[in-house]
Amino acid sequence: MLINQLSKARQLIEKHTPDSLVVIGGDCLVSLAPFSWFLEKYKDKLRILWIDSHPDVQTPKEYKNAHAHVLGELMGNGDSDFTRTVKHPVSPQKIMIAGIHDPLPYEANFISEHKIQTCSPEQVRSGAQPVLDWIKNEKIEYLAIHIDLDVLDPHNFRSVLFAKPGRGQHDFGDVAEGKLNIPDVVKLANQAASISKAVGLTIAEHLPWDALNLKNMLEELPLIGK
Image (cartoon, rainbow, N blue to C red; front, side, top):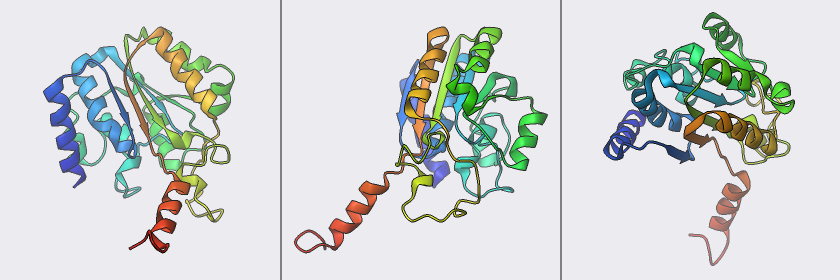
């Protein structure tokens, strides 16, 4: 089903051949079709700024859910059903992951082996100099920006997975949880876009627990529910 949805998304993009594109909603897989399109369109002139607590470079061997594979697939690594849709894979040197911290062992090894540049939450808050240096040193013309909302601190932004009401301390496998706030992310994206032309923006992983719980409650109430 996911492959069919990806194929339809690619067909829609190819039909309209956009020079820029914004996608809001869904999990991190929403970045695969538009970013693979921009990699074909702009080729080596495009770089990817991945704003996320996680690098999303796992494969089905490490983790079954595809939303944790996307950046790896854009590099041509991972499930062949997805990687074959990426006709112009991005070089690891053309990627910056910002907001990442405490990667899992496989992720840390992948980042190290592929020499992917990163910017910690602390560095983002203090001005994101690694990101700015990367853009300037790479002389980046076009930039695709991915924002996974779980880069945000779940104590301050509640509509993310890690803010699930009633969750236990270890319910999510002790993976990294966001440390940034909305102003940090907005400032970072605008800083990057001020010195390189942003052509793609994807915002993923919105999980509005209160809205979902309200919907479920309404379905159980008299005069409203079934």
